[in-house]
Image (cartoon, rainbow, N blue to C red):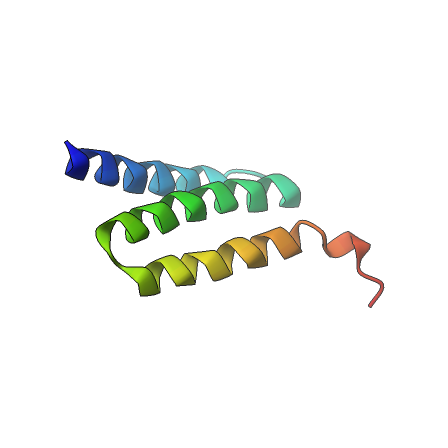
Length: 74
């Protein structure tokens, strides 16, 4: 049952990335990709792939910064 739950997280992340390519708004695009990256991060962490989880954390931070790009002065 545990393996099915972990694989379901991966499929949810994959679906999030597929849906994100259909979104026209930048903020919604990065929000959808952040959701997908969170699902993959959780999946990697539960499977013991800490390097993959850390890679997804970097992506989550990048997406969070990209949703706030209009606030930057430079």
